[in-house]
Structures are given as C-alpha cells and as structure tokens.
Length: 191
Image 1 (tube, one colour):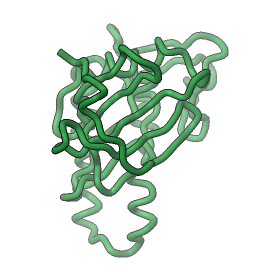
Image 2 (image 1 turned 180 degrees about the horizontal axis):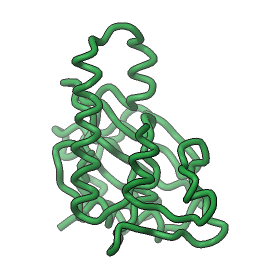
Image 3 (image 1 turned 180 degrees about the vertical axis):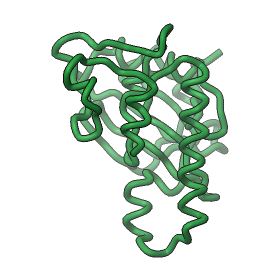
C-alpha cells in the first residue's frame, strides 16, 4: 500500500540536507508536488530511516505532515511526503519578522498544539519538537514534521538507551537526568 515506484517520481531542486541525507522537491505521478527524503549512504541505519516511515504510516492528522509513501526496493531509500511550500517555521518566522499579527501567530501555535495533541492522544512522543521541525503550507497552516525520534509509548513515558543523542537545547531536566521522555517533555520543548 505504501510502496511507490521510483519511476513515478520526478526530482527537482534540493530543499535541504542534513546528517541523514537530502530532501528534494519533486513530483509524484507528474502532478503532485512532494518532498522526497533520501538517506545518505552510511549516514544512519536504514532501519532507523524505515522506522520513521513506519511511524508516519500510523499518523493521519491535518496538522501533521503526511506520508504519501516510500521507495524501499532500491538504494537510496526514499520517504515521500506532502510538500510544504514555505518550509520550516523557524526560517519562515525569521524572514517575515514583524509581519504577522498576534492572531496569526496564535493560530500558528494552535496548529502545532492540535498536531501534538493528536500525537499524545495516540500515545506517541515526538521528542524533537522545535520550530525547525514544523513546516508551513502555502495557505499558512503549520504542521508538525520530522518523526525520526518519535516513539510509541504505553504509559506516556519513554526512556532512551544510554548514549542516545537528543536535542540538548530544548530538553527538560528529566531528560538530562534520567533520559526519560514524555508528552510533558514535548510540552517543554514547545515552550
């Protein structure tokens, strides 16, 4: 159901890159604008990359970036998601500093809250919520993205293994002291 034939994808310009690999703007079936995330060889375990896609397969909400499919039958592996015209919220706010009214800024916050409430209601902890991991659509809707660190939990708590990496700047004390994440640590990250 989720497997996309790579021949259905047309690659366009690069949108960004990181340790994991590269994200490109593309077209799917020559008509849908998509973001195509490709793993950089040796950058991370393929299982971790596929795990992010598996998490996204379980999440459907208008305030979360939606997965369209994956390409796992060739290398590199691709994750294909909806394309968000204005990119990450952090850069969007910096570029438009002073342009938005308080009501628009509050609507952006509410968008993120709705996406995060959905995650919590469905027993997921994001663990990396930040403006850089929220994307803005052409109509100004803000959606939570980047589910690489997201985990399903049974008791609203996840303890990461020793030596695990996490975003230090936004971490609450219980993450530093005990490597313990919860929906409350997501709220802390959100500020």
